[in-house]
Image (cartoon, rainbow, N blue to C red; front, side, top):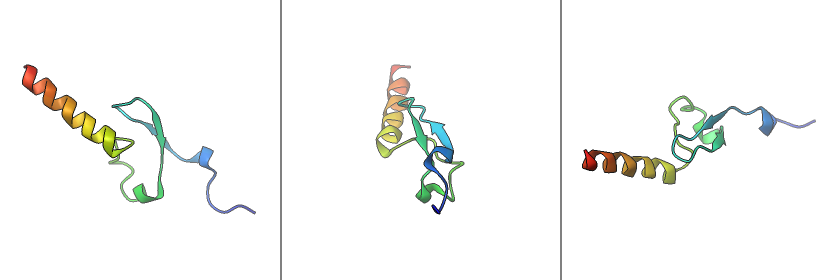
Amino acid sequence: MPRGVSKSNLPTKICPVCQRPFTWRKKWEDCWDEVKYCSDRCRNRRSQANEGRLEKS
């Protein structure tokens, strides 16, 4: 009998930068509600996009 939860039953979110779905990971167990980005790359790109908007204004 398999252990744990099936991958298809894990919660998912949509990354606001790349618009791709990403699933829950064990390392996010305690902070899943605060997770917004699928990766460090997207998190950094979001920061750069915000800085660009500030400079243009």
